[in-house]
Length: 414
Picture 1: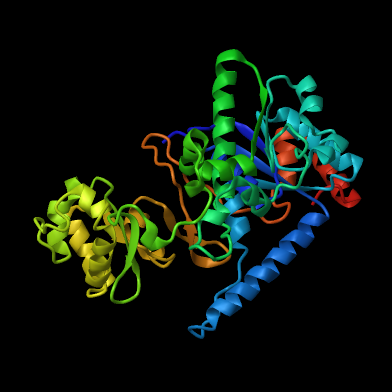
Picture 2: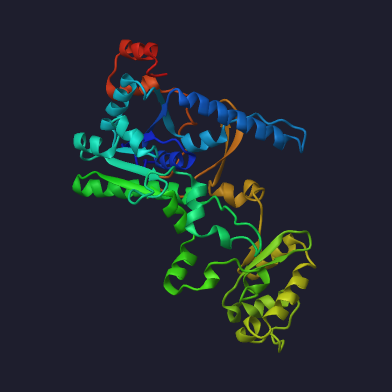
């Protein structure tokens, strides 16, 4: 099978998980991604993450008495399929190597502060003058324009501004950080690169691509945010109590006998009612609920009470089987243990079970996009610090063994 992005060279100058994941998505589809880690900070960063993950593994092990092998799972996910180069960007030799690699690349992808990039001669303006067809992808906190363009790229801060956090909890509870904005931003970053590559294929022109955590968080709330932009109103600004929902059969949750919650998504109740009513012990012709207006209007609270009582009488597995049998738009709300063991997930390669060369059998998130002719694949696990420095400098830049050795002795590379 071919590689969708085969022949594309990407220089990965990212530091944060979400931006690195955007580069990994390009690597999954066959781009040659060279990740540069900046010395000496990279050593401390890797050591700190390894300690944190080891402590988390130890805490998790206390439930079953077994101690799993600690591993830097964030680095593994964000840097799979990449070649690893370690450079001292504070040295002129290290910066020179980075600039040479940038001028060989089709794409440079980074989330580093603009001032740092300018100081290292790795900013868009400098590189575009030397390589006009370069695609320069910047992941930022708040976008390339405006007074906050140089604020740190932290997802929690961007999420705080995006408007979703106060409406997620039940009324009276603190705002909830959803944590998904950085994932949207990672996908947008990869998509922006793909779109720019298509443009370059037609025109020969490179360009600067920017997406931000603020944009990612806003698009994570796009349906409600667009509704607020269109019609305004207080109801989009505050959380809604579960029993204040306007439709007992859509967006409303009920607890099953054994604890899990059941969610219903049947906004057109007339369509679903004939099959749904018998499932919960009701006659479809019950005069209290025999029209959409009654179900969602005058008798809304009564229907909610009936449904609460019905769902509490049977366990979650019963309800899932019943929903599936009747092809109803409803399901059980699961925790992470469900996708971790779901056959559907493994059949579609959303999670991969693999034998890691150092860690042995592990499970890792797979590929959210399936393509039958040029699919995403796992070509290599995440590199160790500087694992491919000599290989990349020799094969891409033509450096001799003596020159590479001198750079290592100087401390400019690992």
